[in-house]
Amino acid sequence: MSIPQNEHPVDRAVRIVLGVVLGALALGGAVTAPLSYVVVLVAVIALVTGISGFCPLYSLFRVSTCSTARR
Image 1 (tube, rainbow, N blue to C red):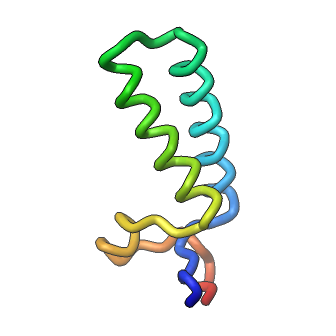
Image 2 (image 1 turned 30 degrees about the horizontal axis):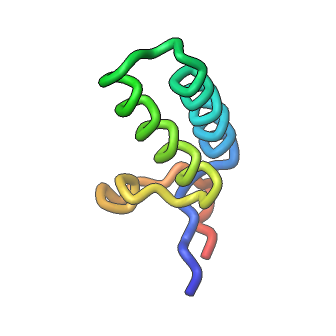
């Protein structure tokens, strides 16, 4: 089963960089609890959607940043 990609490569790169930066901030101690849990959750979601190229919210709202839908 393949997941259709609905993110442009630039969108994916931004999500991956954002996930890494937020994860480093949260795990490095720059953000304290309970906010750190939210930051880690956002970082994980950004990384997973960036790596997979699929965003469930984009799919829900029928949005695609790809120039052509890749399947």
